[in-house]
Length: 351
Image 1 (cartoon, rainbow, N blue to C red):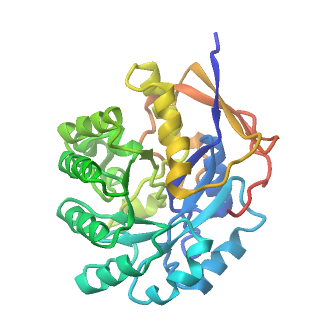
Image 2 (spheres, helix red, strand yellow; image 1 turned 120 degrees about the vertical axis):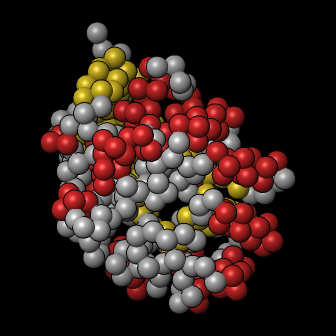
């Protein structure tokens, strides 16, 4: 017996669509098909491409490449680097956030120099958000900079109990701070690495059961504001290579995992909507999508399988996992774009 529920078109503010420069992993077409199949009608693309999005020209190239090829609506983030600071005011209206990489990750946008970081935080327009990849001790530095310069700060992929505690204190102190958790940190721990091997390698890494429980408590307490997939596809060859790359895909599995948590009594449906629609829309100032919604069958149990995925990389760390709750239909601006099997379009727009 099916149990159909209706959700708004969901928002993922943290995806890596890999175009230009790494289209063997994903591109605007395959990545936004994956988004639609997962119930996401708006996604925001990260700047750490092989040629990073740190100039107006690089940003324009992305926009031009995406036009007419996207199945979900796509917006962009700008990258922070010593070279990009001069363009902040010029590009701020075209992007949704500035991404500052304060820990090593994929790409070459790492920023560790204190003076340059001060310039970044003081120069970025204050009505726009700064997103940080800041793990552990580095988070304290990001919080201090945001406090000093009065920035709106969004902490990406929080994974540790001590990070949740630091953010909780910062919020109580009145900082304009929000944070995100990924599905892989909610549903996997370091114990899963034995099984997953390099397919469970990401930045930040999978952590302990205690850290994972702190993330769930952070959702309950309202410390965590958004769920972002950090959709970071890599080919199986890259993952199996001598130097495996960091990152996992997630656009198609986020909602089924969250619906499973609702079925298990761990989350309420109201909280799922808050984490994947209401808060991301508010945090990033995203436009409303009229007549846009997702229908999901809360009663359908099924197994995640690599072969059924839309993402070009063709694998998931959640493959083989049984979930309850499946996306049956997605409507974008009155147009059916997914019927549970087929994806129609492209009807996406550039935000």
